[in-house]
Every structure is written in structure tokens, then in C-alpha cells.
Image 1 (cartoon, rainbow, N blue to C red):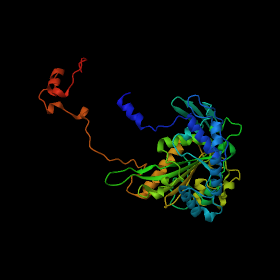
Image 2: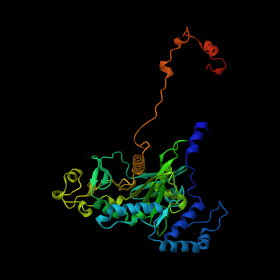
Image 3: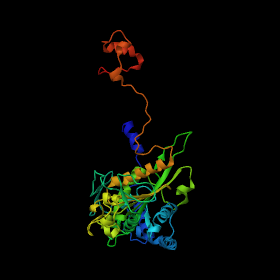
Image 4: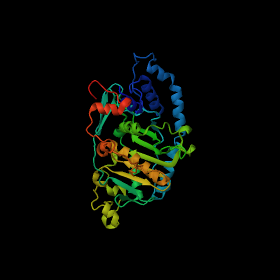
Length: 414
């Protein structure tokens, strides 16, 4: 391997084998702790591990104990989720019922779990109505149904908090609350986990991921690295989106552990918290059902942005995909994405990084395109040998004589 290729390979995240028997057993334990069905595993001829079924029985007591503790703490949220929930209370409480974030999710507490969960252990292909995942020699290939190349009309911002740019669609806060409530109650098909798709009773659950993307790179003697925090909640069938995201922004581990609580390390935290929820089921909802006004009762901007209806059957955003965001100056931002296109997930994290940079200050906005420029010279076009030597048309031997030991002549004449 060339040195450049070896260096490039060293920068890639090292993920465990998605068919590692120990990894599969670990995922089964996490599912059972949630009270979800696990997959049937066979003893691996490549290891000396005991029969997976026997091992499962051995830890039944610990799993049952953990599940009972979770039941008692069913209203308790980990620190980052509580920060998000507090934001929802402060912005939506005056508009009626405030949706509650899921407390029982399959937490991706280490890299590689999302990839293993994207396919049944005994299959190389998994298909659903909105995506296809195929196991390859070097990983997994995910093909979402949607492969979008336009962002026209998809950016919606909830009213309240920070001002809404004129090129974005302004959405009443109570409509955001209605969309959030529906986002947190997806249909069973979307909750079905591909990892268990081959079982008679597949698991149905939310999957969550904790990110700590860099907002301010470390500058020795000036600033430490500063990171924000972002939580993903996705219905189980879309776990491949998290496989994509964590390979770009990393995996910050289990947010329930104090060691991973950003607020306990304020020097490295920007103080800002993001949340992204995937919800394809939001496409096709009616404007009237979400609480948007009739055309005659709408404001001028609502009419311009399409946030009103003339027919009771009118669909929100014409039934197409959209992203809707609620955020304020405290630095909390919650975004719903009604599509499983990978690019929307990546770009939303980058957008949240930009918001954090703007609120923090002394940081370059992610999309700013700013650069530290230095003068450079293209010697191939501007260098004139005649400025240094009286003779320009020197031959190869004269060039070697001029360069001396700095040149290493090759048999091919170069």
C-alpha cells in the first residue's frame, strides 16, 4: 500500500464486523432489556463461545432487573434529552399538550451497532418500501428510495424564538407541536427493526444516537476544541441513516452516563443542544388537521408560504418532503425531517453546527466558506529562468550540473 493510501485508511473509523457473534449477542441483550424480541443466534464455529441461547438464560436475571429499573424511571430522561424536553415545555406549553420524547430507545452506545442493525444477521439484503440495504465485502450499501437534488420549499421554521428568514416558510408554533406529536408516534412498519426482520415477531422500537460534532477546532494557546451536542431519534426501520451519520460525525456513546454529559465539561461544550427526528409519516397530512387556518383567516405571509387552506383536503407542503425547525437564542434546536434521504440528516447536523457557531461567537460558521489565505506562486507559469541565467536553452546535462547532488539521475533519462 502506498504511504498516502495507508494514511487515508488510518483516518477511517474502525468498525467491528457486523456479523461478529459477540456484537450480535450484545444487540440481543439490548433488545431484551427494552422488552423487545431478539433474534435467534446459532453457535459460531469460529469461536469458543457458548451457545447463545444458554448465555441468554444466564443473564436473564440481570436483564429483568435492568428492565424493572427502567420501568420505575420511565419518566426520567438522560441529561441531554431533559434539556431538549425543557425547551419543548418552554416553547410549546402555551399552545396546549407538549409531546414527550421517547424514554425507551435502543441506544447506539458504540460505533458499528447501526450497521449491524441494518440487516438481519443471516441475510445479505433487506428491503422495505422506502430503502434497500445490501451487505458488501467492505460494509453495507444503503439505497434510500428518495435521492433528492433540490431543497426548494423544504425549509420550514416554527414561529417564536429567533427571527425567521424571508426565504423560509414560517409555521405557527401549535402546528409544529402537532407535527412533533405525530413524529413521535410512527406506524408499526416504520418502527420495525431490520435486524429482527427475519423473526416471526420482529422488534419495533425507536433507535437513538448521541453526537458531539466539533464547532470550534482546538487552537493551542488560544482555545480548546468546543463541541455542541445533537440527539437523533429515528424509527427502527431507518437505522441505516444513523450508520451514515455516525461515520461522518462519530459516536459520543451512551448519553445516560455522567462521563458523556456535555454540561459536566463546560470548557469543551458550546452550551448548545440539537435534536433531529426522522418522520416520513408526516408526508400526506392535511393542513386543516394540523391546525392551519383557512385562507380567509390567514395572514399575508401565511398565504404566501402556503400555511393556510382553501380546500379541507389540502395536504401540508403539497404532500412532499420537508424539514421543520424550532429554535431560540438559548441554543436548543429541534428539527423534524419527513424523509429518509441521507443528505437531509447530514446537512441538518451541519446547519446546527452553524447555529452554534453564530451563537457562540469567535467561531467560523460552518457554511460561511471563509478561509485563511496565504500568497502562493505558480512557478510553472511565472518563473523565468532568464532572470537568473544568461543561457535559457540549457540541456539535460547542464541542468544536472547546475542541480548537483540535489538531483538523482535515473536510467530513463529523467
